[in-house]
Image (tube, rainbow, N blue to C red; front, side, top):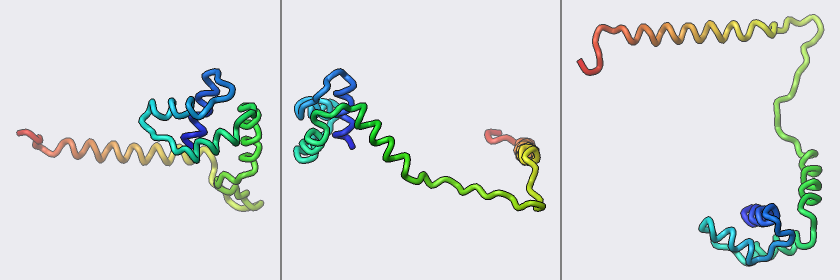
Length: 114
């Protein structure tokens, strides 16, 4: 990933076809030693390609990858579903209880440094 990121940084800086020397210079600036095999692999795969096109193709491929979000379940007709407005009210009540308990701890009759 670091080699691809360095290649993209060089391309973003205006170098349309970064060389191994350019990428190695970027990696050396942050204290990373470059592995020649990986470096040459990145350069050979991206050499002569338009970076914007490569990124657009990659985004298209990522669109088909499942992101692992929660599954939406619809309520059955006639079932009782909680009202959307009731959840914030419940949260407010919990917060009030926490504040009260914290206040009661402050008034114990002695201080830490007394």
